[in-house]
Length: 229
Image (cartoon, rainbow, N blue to C red):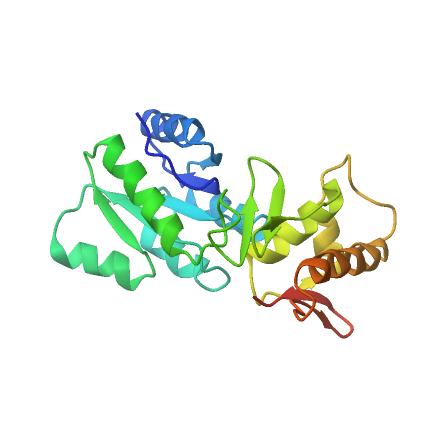
């Protein structure tokens, strides 16, 4: 039985297919979106394209070990990282935490404990992802494909949701117009990158209806946009 928690996009980086499949099943039962990877390099490339809300990361991976993946991830993301490992020595735990991990679970582990730790990490991650619109200044609900601001769900088109969710998942990161276009699925993608400007204008207007004083989507001259909480 999985522990209920906020819906999120969770990356599972684990080369043992059986363990990965069980973890993914529990996460999906809890309402999360899940992407699975068997090596760190491919996971990192995917994380840059589509930032995760939380990462479950095995220590022993082919090519690049978990702590090295975590150090690379920390260059562009603050997503919580939960390391899985058979290493139980204190020095190993310290090494994982110093690499940027937020929590540490030793193998073998129980799924109830793992899911409880996932829920706790999501709660501590600043309230940026969840399903309760009153629980944080802003909330992204991936399962429901909706976003709340100051306790009110915004009325967003598919494209607007994709763009705003991408910005919110990486606060402070500057997105070019092309990179924001890449966030859109084929069914939502527009012809011109300048259409991003129209979407941003609409998003600012819709947020301002709820919170007139806020200016959270910042223009970066000649580059694109960034989100500031």
